Length: 186
Picture 1 (cartoon, rainbow, N blue to C red):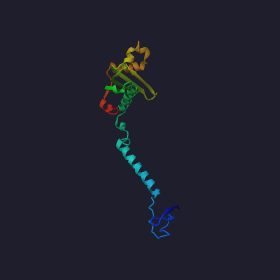
Picture 2: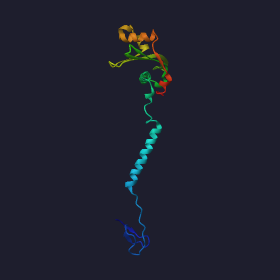
Picture 3: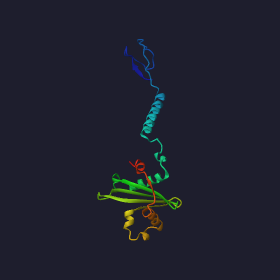
Picture 4: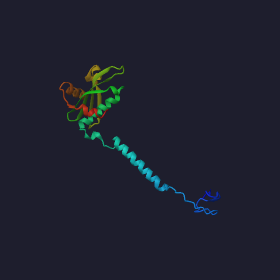
């Protein structure tokens, strides 16, 4: 309870009085805002607004990769992994993607790509991803790295050598639509 001055006679009166005790001036009670109702209402409106904006931005639209086949998911993983390794990922271009299974055990993806090297020149190369799910075996090679080795048989496991022969000599593999994969890396 606080003291205020009467607007008519200027005498001090209680702020809870309905009228001035000195002159009888009727005071109108101040309308108070019920914060117990306002705070939850404002909080609710803010949460709804944030939810709508997140939904509109696509965060809650689900996993878009769920529409991809297993081959496309594996190919996408290889593309993203390679792009992360590049010094200039903006220069990355995928020309073709081939996927095949070797001995029904190993997933193999070969990316024909080009990207800028450290000097700004554009290089074209193959990136080879090999995975075996049973043993958690995973290897990555670039064709230029393999070509630079003195003896591919001495430096690369025999299995990898056989897999690469399947790809390069026998032209094994199923083409994966690069447009589908590139949609996810833009």
